[in-house]
Length: 94
Image 1 (cartoon, one colour):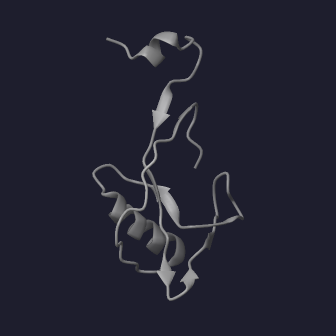
Image 2: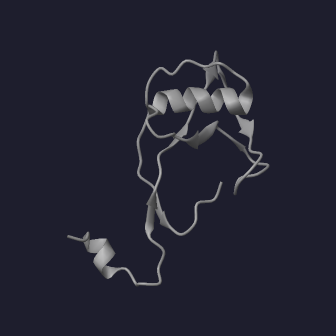
């Protein structure tokens, strides 16, 4: 049985997309790590290390991987601060 949102969706409207994204708050003493984004909608902006959680990857592992990839820093995940669902229609923008 289709979900209620699917029944109301116009046939020409793109399907709903769901992804899991993490952001890492990396702290040393009283400093927080920010990285300059090199791709996507936030190119050139300073942000926390962020990225998509890969299939079969825990959010904590994804946060540590993204920190290593974006900043070259080996971090240890100490927990999850928040979880939020973000859904949109249309193409994914990386």
